[in-house]
Image (cartoon, rainbow, N blue to C red; front, side, top):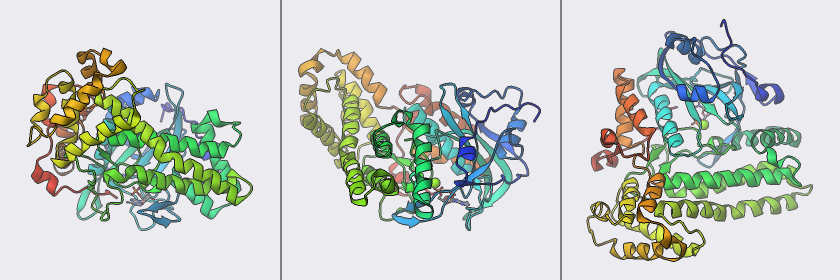
Length: 498
Ligand code: AMP
Ligand code: MG
């Protein structure tokens, strides 16, 4: 490259020797740019103005890495569906470097689908167009919904097939993340190395993500608490938009608190707390309603890796860690309740917690009993807050089913400090919390099929444009906001895309 467009500062490669191995991306025969996130590039402070699409494709396929890139495969382990795999690691991904973004935040830039590494085991190290564009759509939707997430900077078609159940067009995704530190990263070093290494990793994690904990009385206990707090907030946000991650293995839980690894994820359409769409999650371990419980389980695995750092004596360390893990359900509940109140249009948080939680639970129970569309029901509640109850009622087969609930909700809205909120302001606030548009499963699948099977990116591009404005009702995007048909959903399954 004539000019280095990326000012890398690669702390993971430089400061954590022994935690990764160098590896080079595979060369690809015919890179072509399918997606480039210009907004994200600006946020990262990167200037690609001198490069055309072909040059970007060469760069973000891995064929011509930018100056200063130091590609490494990171080591990690993980519990997959409850079973411990002592060695996973970047089997088809490479961290190419870190940059400081416009907000002063350090961000990882990584390739996914860039070929085999020493961690590939029997895998080919590759990725297909469909799952990589899926990661773009869902990640950008999450971002627009205000949910912490890794993001896609680029997707490049490689011009070569990858072989899954059938031959599929190959692709490389460039992923931007606060970091790729996972629960599984700690598990790897707790399993294979000494407490000294785990301490080094913990110090790195604190310096990078929780600098306010430097100098805390027990920084590693504080780290556990801070990671748990971010997960509590994150999972509550997932639950409030009906997001099902689908593969909450410990290697897919980011210590930075971002949603990471969009494989078999999906959004609820009809409200079913037990919903699970992933073809490999036969037991429903990662079903919608299990997510808070699984987060706690994963955090307990994280806590185990920190035990030698928490106290000189193991019994004492276990007691300290257990206290943090045991308060997780309550911390989650507090985040969930705060989000629930916003969704319900309740502005006074000093009201009784148990009563507000029950009000929300009972609304959800109504949706469950008639399998009402989760997103539409919440959205139409905003209309109801302004006195227009008909659109909400129309979602129910038995329009009288919510009578009693609506009366209770109205009483609650009229009580105490809440009474002062004008209906239009309340409805507007609700519309900022209850999205009109989520990535509808049928529309996502259609867009990916067009791109992958017919080289037609138009449906992907228009869906992506729509998903960037989830809280605004725009007539031109109405078809993206429609629930999938029952027929579609009855057979709907998602796949890991590995
Ligand atoms: P994931 O299901 O994407 O979270 O991946 C779980 C583990 O499998 C990670 O260690 C990945 O690097 C590895 N993996 C997934 N797909 C492939 C592939 N096609 N080739 C090599 N490794 C893979
Ligand atoms: Mg993963």
